[in-house]
Length: 133
Image (cartoon, rainbow, N blue to C red; front, top):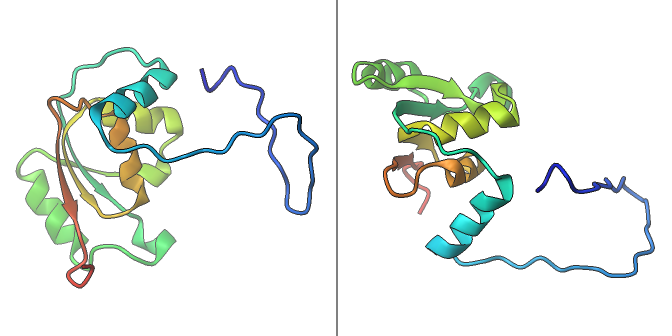
């Protein structure tokens, strides 16, 4: 449904006169809103089988795991592939998360894509900074 909408991107210092304005509100992280959001993308079902270590390109973003190579090697010994979502298109990210059964990822906004994972069979380990909480 998203692709069929007539998108208008507002530039800084640009003003628009509208007849009707909608205010978005957050929903709770319950199963029903999760499934309704997934339905907006109208994605075909896919089998989840991948084991993914979702890392972050520290050279690009200046933050990441200090021992990423070590973690990546250890996870690879258990069949995990290391992936940098920022190097993938939205379609590739969607497919990645739809087909991922086991996900190890750094804490951050990149985990929003877990929306596309199979909520009944997927498993996620989120790596948090030691002093985060």
